[in-house]
Every structure is written in structure tokens, then in C-alpha cells.
Length: 453
Image (cartoon, rainbow, N blue to C red; front, side):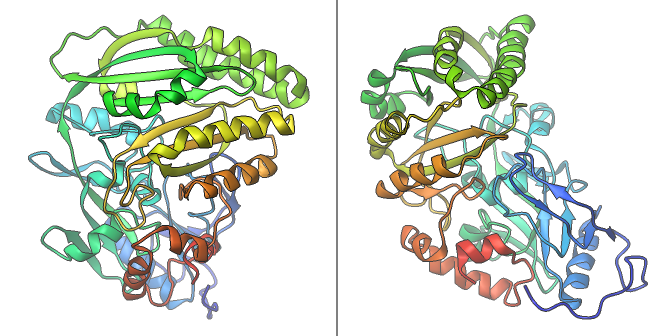
């Protein structure tokens, strides 16, 4: 971080933008990171973002944009100026299927915003608390071998650079920057709006079934290719996987949604209330985890329904956890999962959270985990009150042995030297960063770790 220069005694100083006030302690959702920035900026318009960045740069402070805090890494942390983009929200413009959203628009707001337009996101993950800017900046994705992550749906952004310039980046203006800016790690500037290419509203026919884990792993490539959106969860200490197969249907197809009681019982009472109690009990008495996992797979899944896409993609998650996720060549997934299963058994670890497996199409974004290759994702989790270090470190070694790339918003131990070898566009991204932020106004410890400067 640049050396701090003389600063005003308080943000009430005439030289400080009105959007800035003293900072307060910040914690992320997973409680894996915290920071106490000197200032907090809450701009309500783009001009205030420009003023904030100019103020920080001129006073030797760094700036980090902050959305919903759903990254497990310290990618949003700073001791300088935390810039909360939450007030920059909503639909700004619509051009056919291209919808421009304020950067602080949360993903859970999108169904209400897009439905009146007859539109939906092409694909979504299973959590929708993130802001659109945070989701694309860290590489948030869903599942589906023919569909890219949310950043792959970006057709333009507006970025405020370290110089305070409002830079529009799209197919016509500064097009050469889009493969970097669509998934920029917050390293290139502050996003103030994002243009997403949407699709007409559609339904998903969901089939959720427990199946033998060996069978699912053996059929992984076939099922991920043949099903629009296929994912599964392998429960440690069991031989069972919970599969989720979602098939796309036209928006006017008949709906057969879950009843309110069924959704509440499965997704709120069981998946959150009961599971929270199980995780807490498992921390206190790890020996109970294997039998509980075996019971859980008997009570989970085994349902079929059809509903609007966002209602099927998204699951309410209120049990806090910490996560590491790696992107692998899609055909490497079965061997990697089997290696994790063997690791857990050999170490006699008691792990309550399942191993999660998804897929994505190749894309051309410079720092996308799916850049240049069809991708499978393998994620491991631990309850937030448990220490994940040893488990994650050993799983990471398996992932690296399978040419893995870590999710930017989830815990990992990789550094720039090894990441540069994993991404063909890594040096091109660094060159664009040098152009847009030569003084490292948007730097922090995490970016120094993963980008090397």
C-alpha cells in the first residue's frame, strides 16, 4: 500500500467528500475475514464514487469496493477506504436482452427487476446474496456444461479508474479491456454499473435424487453433457451422492412448484434449522458426524418440481460455513473427488459438509476459472466454528495435482507465481492493471498475494 500522507482530521473536513464518514469494523459473511478501514464511503451517485477515489488517491489511501461480503477471502478488505456500492442499484437501461444494472444490485433483487421485462439470467449459483459487481468480480458461477458463469454473461461495464476517469467498456468502447474488466478482482477500478445479456424467462424441471456415489462419478461426463444443469453432493462417511438435474423449459410451460410447506420443511427447517444444530453438535462431538451424515442422505432430496428458474437455482443458506472451491478440467473431476474421499477416510477426519460438484462451459475471460477449457468445480466446506486449515490444505494439494484453479472468492493458499502458470491471460491482465491502476489505489494484501504486485 502507498505510504499515507497527511490526512484531514475527520471526514467532515472541507476536502473530504460528503459520502465519506469514519470507518467501522467490517466482517465478511463467513466470518473468515475482518478489517477496520479508516473511512467508509457510501456514494449514491457516480460523481461521489469519483470524489471518493480522488480523495483516497490524493491522501495515499487505498480503496476497496464492498458489496455483500460473501467472499471468503480478503479480496474486499482494506485499512483505507471501504466503498459500499449498495446504493448504486436497480435497472439503469434496457436494450433488448441487454440489461444495465447498478453495481450494488443484489442477485436476489433480479427476479423482481427482470420478470416485468420477460427476462432472466442465463444461469445462477445457489446463493443470491451477492451484488452483481461482486459476483462477476470474483467469478461466481452456477452449473451447466453449456453455460458460463455470471461474468461470461457481461456485455459491458462502467468503471471508475484510479485517475477518477469514468470509463465505459463494451463491444464498441474500450472493447480490448472487457475480457479483464468483466472479471477484474476489484483490481482495475470500482464498477458502477454492469450490462448483462439476459434470456427470455424460462422454467426449470428439477429432479433431486440420492444415488450411489460411485455410479454418479462414473457417469459424470455423460450426465453433465446431457443435462442442462447437473450437480451433485457427495456426503463424507457415506456411499451416497445427492444429485440435482435441472432441465430448461419455456417460460409458459406448466409450473408444478413445491408447496409452501414442502419448501419450508426441506429448505428452511431441515437444510438450515436442523442442519445448524447438527453442525454445532458435530463440533462438540465429532464422533456423531458419520452416523448423522448417513441419516441426512436418507432424509435429503428425492423430490421433483417445476418452477421459474431463479426459484430452482437458488437455495437459502443461513448456516455459516467456510469454503474452498477449485476449477478443474472437466474430465479430472471423478479422480479428484475419489482422492478427497480417500483422504478423509485415511486421515479419519469427521467432515459434516458434503463435497459439491458442478460444471461450466469454457470462456475467454482472462482470469476466469473456466478460461479456455470446459470446467468442473469441486468445493469443500467446513462449519464456520471449525478450523478448516488442514482439510483445505490437503484438498488443495489434490486440486493442484489435477491442474486446478482456485475460485477467487473462496479460501485458498495460491500465490502469483503458480497462478500465472495456470492462466494463459495472466500477464495480459497485469498489463491492463498497470495501465488502469499504476499507483495501486485498489491494492490490498489479497491482490498482492494473487497478482504479485
